[in-house]
Image 1: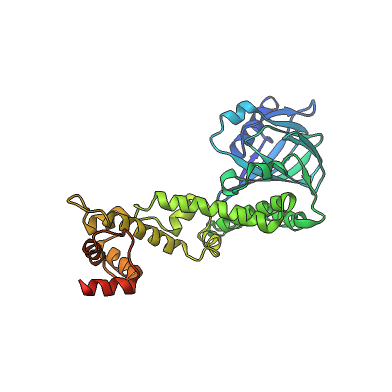
Image 2: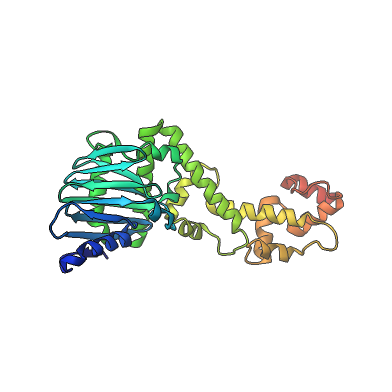
Length: 338
């Protein structure tokens, strides 16, 4: 459901304060200076698609500043794409100053100071997403902030109608579709940066690799949680499960299989321990997120050709020379010979 914030019924003396608070609630805290002498009027329609915040804003002339003091108090970093629907604007960030016409796109980073000046009444769509989901190097992002991106050719020509339609229909999408659309906007923004900073294949691969590394780190940190799954990983990173699986299409392993593989590797390390303090098979299984010893035993045998206890017995018979499971066929022959 859309949230509508308007100054229409606010007393004139309170309109500017109301508008500043409305922008802080829906986007990020900023300072506001009116561009005229009369009462200030504005209207925001805000929608949320997964981790993506969409605001359609129509207002009188004003100046918007994101100051160092406001940035210092921020708890999360965001990147925003502005679509200028009507009126003009001037964006200043990272030492650049861009004149923005109707139909242009702008990109800005909320972790660095910026200024938006609107000399007359205007309408703009703003798409704001967490900085962390992009996986963009700072150097790349800084090459597009403070610039106006035309939409007559290149990716901008395809991006403008998509974003305009999305802003108009955001309130109609179910949560599952909303998550996928947020992922689509993320992909398109990363591709837009790629188009303007470096050859696309190299960049796209780098951004994907960065995000996959974050997912792998998350898996390693939560192996002991039986609830770890593609669904929980997607939720933690505010992406759809389908988008998560797409990220891993070129990895040669599914997310679910990677979780099990990493759990088995950690279990092997523990089973290799010798002495009176060596943990039991069931303790190892539960410590690394298997729901039961039986489940662990089946997974271990499917991967290594032996049960956990058989592998431990074989390793003890070999004098603990290796902490890694032997190949299944070799392990079976060696066990039969002992």
